[in-house]
Image (cartoon, rainbow, N blue to C red; front, side, top):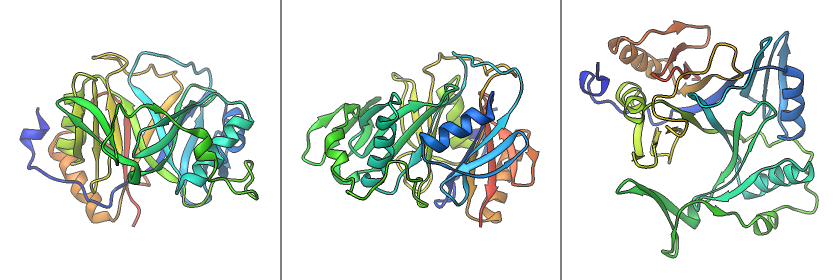
Amino acid sequence: MNQQTALKKYSIHPAVKMGHVSLTVASLENQILFYEKAMGFKTHWREGNRAGLGAGGADLLQLVEEPNLKRYRGGTGLYHFAVLFPDRRELAIAMARLFALKIPNSPTDHVMTKTTYLSDPEGNGIELYCESPEDGSWTIKDGNYEARWADGRWSDGREALDVDALFKHIRDDDRVDSPIPAETRMGHVHLHVRDINEALDFYHGVLGFDIMGVSQGIGMAFVSAGGYHHHIGLNTWNGVGAPPPPADAVGLRFMTVDYPNPSALGEATSRVEAAGIPYNKTEDGILLHDPSQNGVLLRPVG
């Protein structure tokens, strides 16, 4: 069934945001240590084999330890989750922490965002970023991703970040071992999928995320709510037709999509049901899987 044609065209509520990401981990202890020390997260709670971490408010990350897990490569699942900092200064502090701990990372200038990429000890991809729309913007034109600086200069959107310039935003009294600020939130989640059109049929056709750009040549698409550049990234970089990870894999359990009220979630649930997509009701909302078997939790937060 092609949900895009079978369902009435619908645009997701503009106030939808990304909530926490839930990961299955091989070592809860080691992962908590990494996220506290290297990322500046706070442990909000810990119960048995589970823990929730973040900036002191709602969880940004939830970890669930299971025995005898392995890291598999080449399948669908998490490419990275992206932690959004409120400004350049806070991103600079977070990056300075990584440099001080000698944690490998890849500072990158996407023009309209400043960012760095790294992985946690179990291979889960992480992006740390802040918005910088004053510097320019990006688009996908004729199937090609490109960016433009504010003065009109072209960019491939993957330039090396001027780290020295970013670090000038750090104040003399800032400490690199301080926790991340309370305003920090989950900005977006980027997924490996088995087919771009199939993924868009689900995220756009059923859930109603607006398509912000598609590049079949690159094997990438972005969708969002409320005009944001992207809340969810989709790619086939692990191969078209890539299989889901085995049951004993570390990695993504599910990502969370936060709806502003129960009514907005009810609309989404009705569309899921009309499309014939199975889901499980949980204490938080409804848990379902996209066609590539990536877990998605839809929940109300208002």
